[in-house]
Length: 254
Image (cartoon, rainbow, N blue to C red):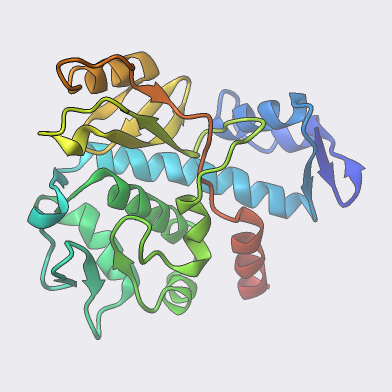
């Protein structure tokens, strides 16, 4: 159920603002049919979440189609014109560089970059926000960026690093496939961070875009010899604070 300003939402009116078969409509249907009450201060707050979830999927698709390499932390690479590669394998925004330019460069010159799956997820969320926020607002909010999994993530995006059990799982969520019996010789296969791409598909950097069964099969192919436990999709998700990000956006453009 969707509640807006204390009242049940008019689902037909909200859905009519988005194309048929769109991811926004799919999300509205999930929220509206849920036993969970999803509460928003305004219709605009809900619309922001719907649009951002769409842009998360668009950014994940763009990264999937790019030449971004998979690299473990000790072998990561980046474009030195925009980023300083640090000893821990993270990328620190270079002084004097626009944050928006640096994020866009990962998609423009993707072959210069290589990182692991968690950092790729963070890149997806920055790109999604950059697709919505005006450039000036994005650069104002993210003056310093350090790309390295969840350890140095900006406070505005900290929730994507916090996996929590949810009543419903939605397109644009960050999910995680765990591989408890991973081969110790290939620890990079201990799990896969993914974006829920809708229609049962998930994107994971270094793995690709597949359904859950295929991802689990790939992880199971990288278990230790006497493995007992199959890989599995964890019953939890990481998702940003859409309401907070929405409030920042509407304050800026009003």
